Length: 260
Image 1 (cartoon, rainbow, N blue to C red):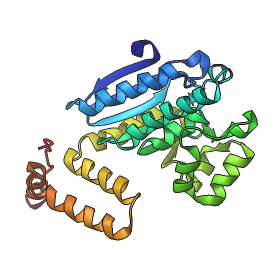
Image 2: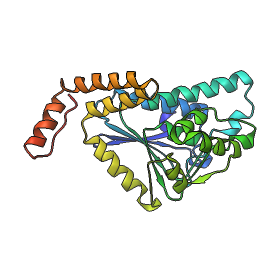
Image 3: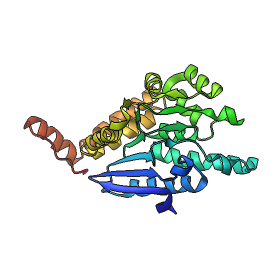
Image 4: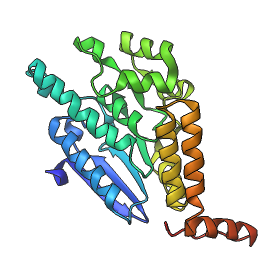
């Protein structure tokens, strides 16, 4: 089932996960959520994988939302379980110890924007549209949209997007801090791969340490965050990568990181 719902490719330390439901605009149903959960768990454990790119098949959508046809008949208990299913998967992505880049090639609406926001970095085509249109279905965001939007772009923008349900352009998403970069649609794949390659060549343990610091620091007070950062900083001094990086700097050469 995973092979049908996701196209998976790995090259040069970069794993690309492509949601493969173009006829449904890559809408997230229960099976797709489970396939993504499995794929990210496998990528986390694969030593050959240093960076993950997440995108959607076709030219129209990254993910156009959750599968409305599947949701239409859910009971309240089933609705809560569906929400928790997606939330658990996206929390796994957010806490992953390897960088995850969302390559937003089209519509990222509802669950699609929620999926993009749980990734560490987001690169969007200039033609992409984003939004939380659940209000138009008599719903609210169910995969963390209200919470991650609040943390990315603040209260006013979160309320605007969630209360009106209106989509926004990629440029406005960049202005609000929802995405990191906007590039011409024709250059999206190349620019995302360029960023992924840069990260794949960086020191893996340092990348992991920085991801941990941001995740921990974002959920605790400043004193605890600073203490955690200092502990992670000290831990880096036990790594071969730290010795290699500092030696390469002093010797004016390019470092070769091993992840040890």
